[in-house]
Image 1: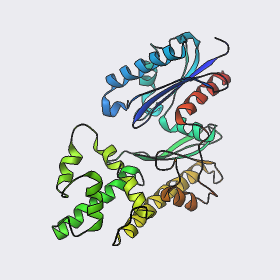
Image 2 (image 1 turned 90 degrees about the vertical axis):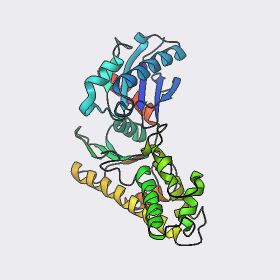
Image 3 (image 1 turned 180 degrees about the vertical axis):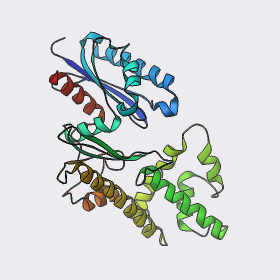
Length: 314
């Protein structure tokens, strides 16, 4: 094998992605597997899926473990800030001679978005968080507490506002037929009454945060008038999106202040910010950005780039 090879591992909220690239960042293979957040699936299961994914990636690329010069890994729920030993323990048996870079899902997303290690990343997908790395190496995180403690402005938060609005309206009117927003929500979920939301929400085949976050698309469509409502539902949705944008922008500005870096480059990541919609537009405006930041690379390629940076520094 000519030249060093680098592996990137991105264990996001919904999928595990593994990539092997050459020094020019040209992919030799790409693997996608199920989510591996150890707090959700358990550490043993997460390790097994990651190790199997590494083996499959090596096989698909037609290379040996010794051919991988360096690896960077970022797993949701297992940041290097608190789970570095576990990350190393997970990948070391599969790659005994490889230089390892335990990282976090936020750091590899930052490197992917900006193409470098320094700057600020705003993530808004199922959850939300802001991650910053100053030029002197200082690393800080704002938010990212999970759906029970925070994640305001995220897909989960947007979906939850919709469900709370529907259930509150039902309690007030005791009828699911008198409110346009309720009908739109129930029709989208193929449910008959708001009481059916209980069984829909707490079934065991999918975690509630992901299921609730999927409703964010409905809120965004209502806010953008892509779904027509005969009453004030559109205005309600716009107000909710504005509140989400205000929170996310405030978190970024807090990071700017904490890093004492008002001119830091800002990258976007996560399903809510990876495309043009009312939320990404409003956040960009509130941050004074001329346009929505477009990521240079995906987070998994960001991990491979981080591995290359680590190896080159050595």
